[in-house]
Image (cartoon, rainbow, N blue to C red; front, side, top):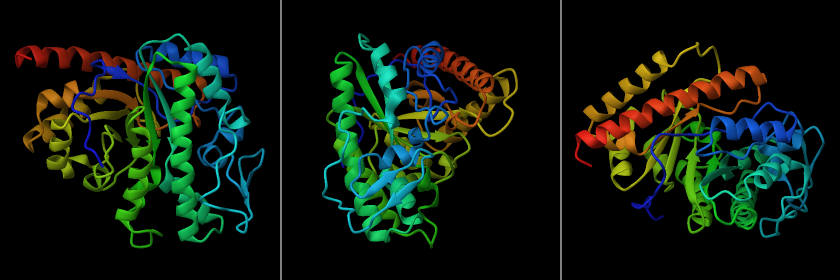
Length: 339
């Protein structure tokens, strides 16, 4: 697959969201997004409003032979499941996309970048396999359906917000387990599936790949995203050489620097020290310190659907403060380097 675009153009010091929000009202969720991430707002998914907005339920919407129930669970008729069948609901009119529709209505006149996301083929294939679909069929269906949905999503967003720059993240939490010997497909086959989805997007959107835990980042970079999205404690320092090349080719990193699985504290000092220490370690292993800061944005580690709204506010406030520090430092480093 084509390497990251060397001319990828995004503002320095962005913050954005990852995954789901805890809100029930789409209008409240969109207001939350625009207030906390005005420079790169992310279309929300709202499983508290409808379980059909959950990751797996969204991925399964419109697939022949798959029924998505009100509680988000799936029923499948393997005799009807067909990897070649077109997806239903190409206009994203169903219950699975209430948050997306509300977001696009509100930002219809926007000219700056916006972020959307979809469940990746490996994670969706794992979900199908876990409910009894043979592994070969599960991943063939997941790969074909996700590539179809990726194209349809970016086309739909382009129709609704024609002047915006679209950033699309493929969400792949299951890649954390891709190297496990009991994983149902080979690691390179998993990466090929993800690469196919990114390839379906790359002519219409900036592409991102989100994995919310420790993983083989050398392998993940082979999928060809323009933006890697990872927690700061995901072990990327073990792939510093590959990351250096990724940055030099124009790739960006969305650093999941604000925890979503425990207390975060009232200030960003500890979080900033942790991120700065990681950058120092990566610089010592050959990564360009200017690119580490200039080709970067800040996010929470994962989605916020299991938080209360007040907790989600705190996480996103810290995300925004870290992004402001990043913007200041990236600007200073560029000036010092004569950029």
